[in-house]
Image (tube, rainbow, N blue to C red; front, side):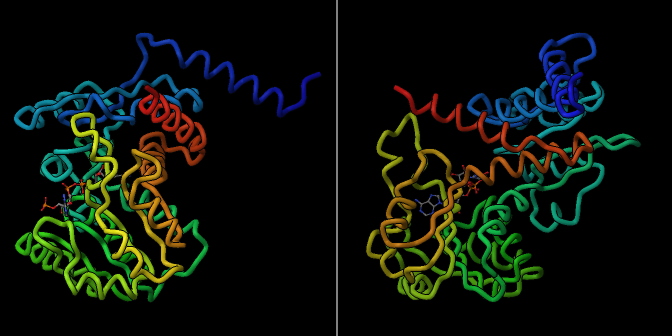
Amino acid sequence: MPSASAARAAARAAARAAARAIDGHTALLGVLGDPVRHSLSPAMHNAALRELGLNWVYLALPAPPEQLATVVRGLEAMGCRGLSVTIPHKQSVAALAAELSPLARRVGAVNTLVPREGGGWFGTNTDVEGFLAPLQAAGRPWQGQRAVVLGCGGSARAVVAGLAELELGSIQVAGRRAGSREAFVADCRAWAPQLEGLSWSDDGTAASPDLREALASADLVVNTTPVGMASASDPAAAGRSPLTGAELNALPAGAWVYDLIYTPRPTALLQAATARGCQAIDGLEMLVQQGAAALRLWSGSDQIPVEAMRAALLSQLTGQQAP
Ligand SMILES: NC(=O)c1ccc[n+]([C@@H]2O[C@H](COP(=O)([O-])OP(=O)(O)OC[C@H]3O[C@@H](n4cnc5c(N)ncnc54)[C@H](OP(=O)(O)O)[C@@H]3O)[C@@H](O)[C@H]2O)c1
């Protein structure tokens, strides 16, 4: 007679096999972006949906900005079970949600839409939870520590929200354009009073004296710029780093360096940081954990197959890097 655990495994395998077939009952989820064909989210989420045995499918859904409202309303009308939102819609989609989480309001960006029972979409932001996961897993107290954040665009807001939640003592944001840096600090100060702006050079290639001084006493540096991200149109891009070797050498040896980029792995920044004796974190786990948090909201299940999601992403990334 099969054991209870063998019976459960067989039931899960049967559910997975059934879930692979798309039929008249298959429900839809997806990611809205423009462009979005490059997104790794379909591979990651469909791997999880198979494991969960759900008859759902997750697609990349291209939505040009002028069509976003039509697409979002149409998907609601079709009974879509949930949406991820990526560039360039994370800010603009907030106006299309019937309700926003306090976190989405604070961050000023929505990366997840969940259908509400009474109609309309609930917009929230799981990037903060995704960003925090590897820092919380690091097993060291972050409270009172000093962080330098490179870049002040969309993801920097989620990063600052996460660092404020961890109660860092100082968060300094370096931005190359004074206007956007000052606007960023002014926007976020209400909920991150420990936030300050730091000037960078005009082109982001050399640190200002302010940034150099901040790096010398930083416990954590987070790169939120795209500098160092692999690009099909610019083969040299993957070799770039937002900090020079000399700037990295100014960091205390035990500092942590977190790069939101996940391709290439490791980035030039993280290679140099490791050589300096720093601890390195790349953006892959953030991607996995923000997706897992979204799937928890869509499915109502706490048993999210995070391993399968990570494996699917790694397999996609390996495939992309293969000649
Ligand atoms: N791992 C994840 O789950 C995850 C999630 C979100 C984002 N990301 C990654 O994070 C990166 C940023 O995304 P985002 O949405 O925040 O982009 P974004 O809104 O465009 O912000 C990018 C920021 O970087 C600055 N920047 C760009 N090039 C620079 C340079 N050469 N020197 C100095 N600063 C520079 C920009 O300044 P200007 O305004 O002056 O151009 C801006 O402040 C991307 O690589 C993205 O793939 C990863």
